[in-house]
Picture 1 (cartoon, helix red, strand yellow):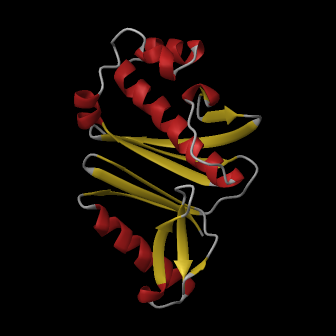
Picture 2: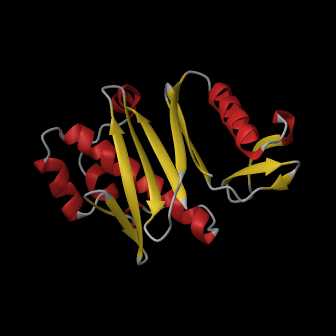
Length: 182
């Protein structure tokens, strides 16, 4: 299974005052807080860990077809791994001065994912994703649709049938991204 999360760092700086009393404790375990404070750049480390938790949550939700219920303390970050309920997810994070982007995937599975980050309108990246899927699957573009299921999990439909292709979408501020495992 696969999940992703992107954080627009400029927007996060405006939207969140992570230094206010109690904020870190609500999201991060004691060891995660130590990692944040020991980092060369605590601000970047906060958003890296946050994006790791969010990406792993999406992968976990898809893997077990769970209803939306996110408790950040249930997702424990160490290095480039997130563990929850005895399930482990590897993560890959990309940093720029504008965003932090993380992909999480199950340790137990071989993945062959493709991921892209976009600036601008969400419709643009979804259209590019639909074109990519149509090309890979050898179908007409008009036969590929992206819809969320009743749990909010993105689903690729081909000719109105679920394709069961693992897909994760993420948007924040000026950035959008997808990760898909074909």
